[in-house]
Image 1 (cartoon, rainbow, N blue to C red):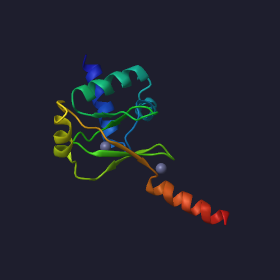
Image 2 (cartoon, helix red, strand yellow):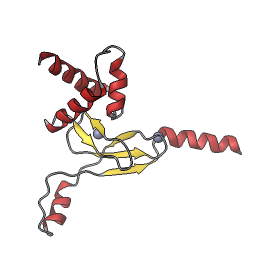
Image 3 (cartoon, protein in one colour):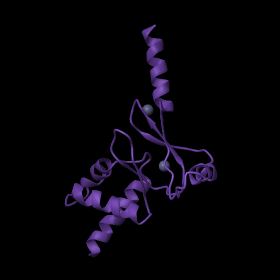
Length: 135
Ligand SMILES: [Zn+2]
Ligand SMILES: [Zn+2]
């Protein structure tokens, strides 16, 4: 039992320290060298458990793998359509407006997910540099 909770903390720390919201695979590959007994199933199970506990947020990406976020406050995400990385978008979360709109329909809102897509800054710079070279 002790062993499992230690693995869970290690997985949690890995998500917290990862610069970009990792997938379960990325968490697994980052940890497996130092933890040869770790299995991908254990990583999945603990990531889902941590998100059920509210310690991590699971981000569902359309046409992509779920990602995990150490930040659990409401915030927006942008997925780069070029490199696939997921970024936090700093923007006041208009939760009240969403609630107002949807309560008119008789729904009760318990969570908000908004995923934007675009081209991240570093990809934009690379793409701009590439097109200059082409000329
Ligand atoms: Zn990108
Ligand atoms: Zn985030």
